[in-house]
Structures are given as C-alpha cells and as structure tokens.
View 1 (spheres, helix red, strand yellow):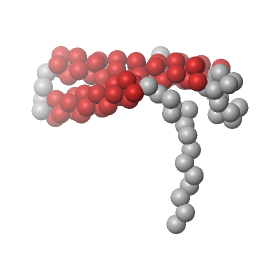
View 2 (cartoon, rainbow, N blue to C red):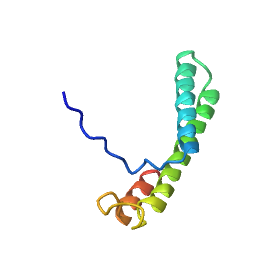
View 3 (cartoon, rainbow, N blue to C red):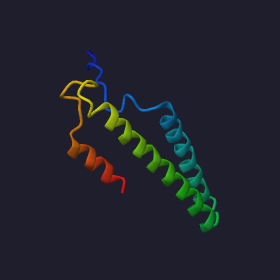
View 4 (cartoon, rainbow, N blue to C red):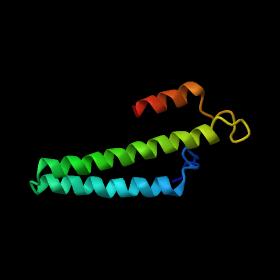
Length: 96
C-alpha cells in the first residue's frame, strides 16, 4: 500500500498558543457535555459554553491573521498555496 504524499495546509504556521487554546477549548467542551449529562444548572452550562465559544472564535481569528501574514505575502508561499483576498474574507465572515 502506497501512502499519499503529505500535503502542507495553509494552517501549518498556526502559532503554538493557538493550538493550545484549541486543546483547552476541546477539554472545556467535554466538560460542558459532562455538565449537561450530570444535569447541572443552565447558568453554569451556558457560562462554560460561552467560554468555549470565545476560545474558538479567538483561535479562528488568530488563524485568519496568520493567513493574512503568511498566505497573502507573495514571498511566503507558492501561488497555488496562497489564499485570495476573497477566500480570506469568506473565512473571516464565517466566524461572524
């Protein structure tokens, strides 16, 4: 069985802090699910869910900012790997 060549994604330059934020959000989301399964109060659940949502939004905006620096810069990537302004705009608006 042959393996497909490894492709680099546009997100390969995501800062370690963003990956850590996503890992924390992953753990928080698991906590929210457990809270719901345990029958915890709505106020507690919604507060934790809001924290997860904020962490995900911040990570998304950081990834887009990284894309602006790394993917639009002609010196930074091959033409096929660069994101167009329209693609970046769509990504940005998808978080709104």
